[in-house]
Image 1 (cartoon, rainbow, N blue to C red):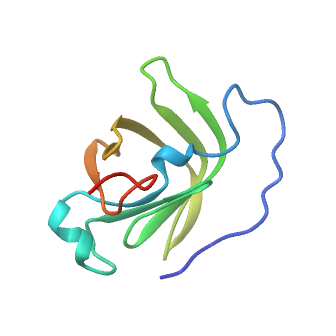
Image 2: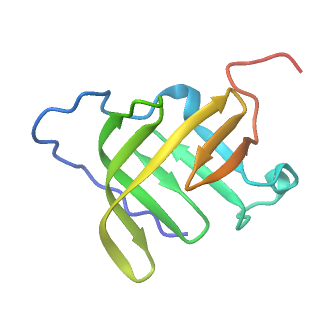
Length: 116
């Protein structure tokens, strides 16, 4: 999988943090059974400034907290055919459910050393 990473210079002021919170970071899948499948088309990986799907992703330059508690990451989307200005909105429903692109994703790994 291609990862387009690089240093981004942030200009202006944002009302939110400069990266996604640790509670959202990690591996997720839209179907819990897909968690065990490496490189599943149903998977998503959330990093502090990047959201990666099977064949595309988002590099986040600015994060804004919306009134409903969700976070809007603005920057650019990228895929095999290039990149363009884009955004993605993420909302943590509970510690193990994250809404992204209108779908609910389930956490694939334990978070913060939780029990069982």
